[in-house]
Image (cartoon, rainbow, N blue to C red; front, side, top):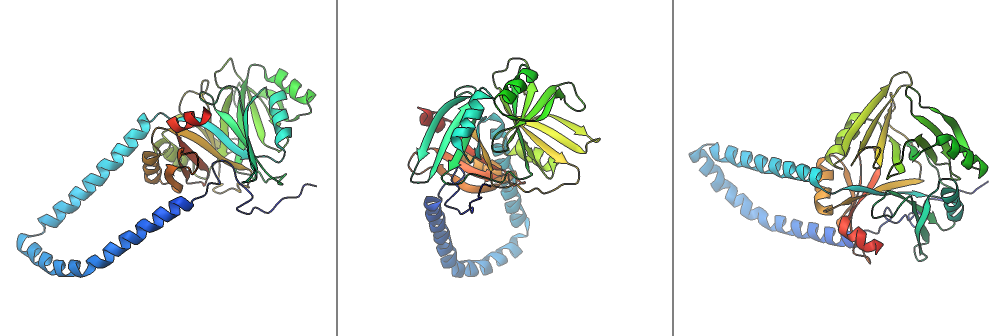
Length: 355
């Protein structure tokens, strides 16, 4: 029986979700001290000004204060509108999905032999005690890919109940399932039409227990086509992904017989690009996320404006926007209202990394 290692902060280090924040903390804390210093020294002046100001307002009436407040509100509203409009114009694309595995070579073998992926690159970081492997159906500069993380000495993770599955589009589900079985893969749902529809699907599990849905489709430029996550409030999630992440709501489907609703969101149509499939199960508002799935990475032209939009949309910034120590790639890390993590990566910096 595999031993589960304790989840100490130093032991789990995926490439983007385990970043050190020291540089940010120094600058952030320094700026707070600076602000506190000036506010403290300004108090006596503000008190003396307050007597004169109150007299002036009594003489001039209240129009001054009302006008000032109205101007401030108008300015704030304009700024928010500009940021949210910019999100719609930003050149965004789902870059990769990050998650942890217990045996990197075993998983690479399964993905290449059973799922037909290519190993695009590997990087080992011994000082941080982790290794990454990037796999997919095409180059990273134009395709959505998988980033596997192996942390030294940890061979098992808890996937939890919140993560759903990844989706892969294939031309013949039945043939794909035969191949997977021949290679020793685990099939959890035999090929057949999806409940309430005509699309032929099947479900399989990789060696770590991650589920993959095989969807029968014609030729597509993006075979790795879905990431399904469960959320506790679908309307809230849709609103956030549209506003903060700039995704388009492609479609929704309610299935009252099985008590769930799904929403498909992304940066392009489902048959040509990767999408997020958010699932709401009737009456379930919280899930156990485990410690296996990490996050998605999304390209952006401006991580600083992206951070503003995330805040306006109700998300939580977990790493302030700025360059990463050592490689200078600018990122911003965040969580959506359900706690799902995402990292936005500067588009130009990302391409430089690939070089």
